[in-house]
Image 1 (cartoon, helix red, strand yellow):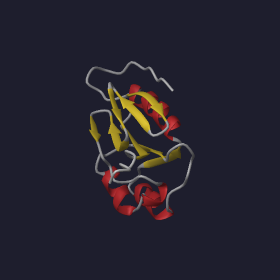
Image 2 (cartoon, rainbow, N blue to C red; image 1 turned 120 degrees about the vertical axis):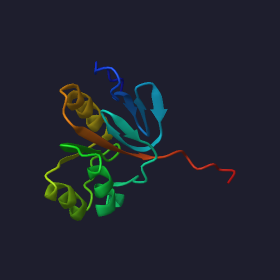
Image 3 (tube, rainbow, N blue to C red; image 1 turned 90 degrees about the horizontal axis):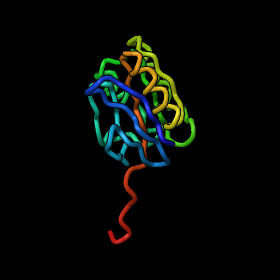
Image 4 (cartoon, rainbow, N blue to C red; image 1 turned 45 degrees about the vertical axis):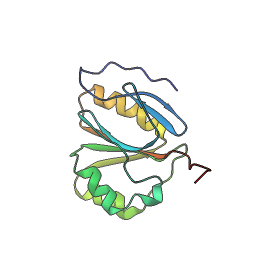
Length: 131
């Protein structure tokens, strides 16, 4: 799905989202990531909702968002309650959705100047069959 949205110069945004890959500005990424309007954290180690634990929530909270959009892949899958509670205790809102919905919503909220973080779970590069 192609996403187009005008954001202020120098801000990160999603240009496209497809199964297993997102495009941030003009870079195609195939590993999980955290995206805030002013920074990107590549190779985020969380690839499944079950892997989103309290430590992962702490890493997201370090970016100081108002709201977190947790993209859990092609289907919406809720992570453990403890991880969600870790964000809510800090008064950080969290919404769990598909990657496509998280990318679209991120672009809208970032375009409004909101302090939003998209946490996008991707399976990563396919294993090399020669390994």
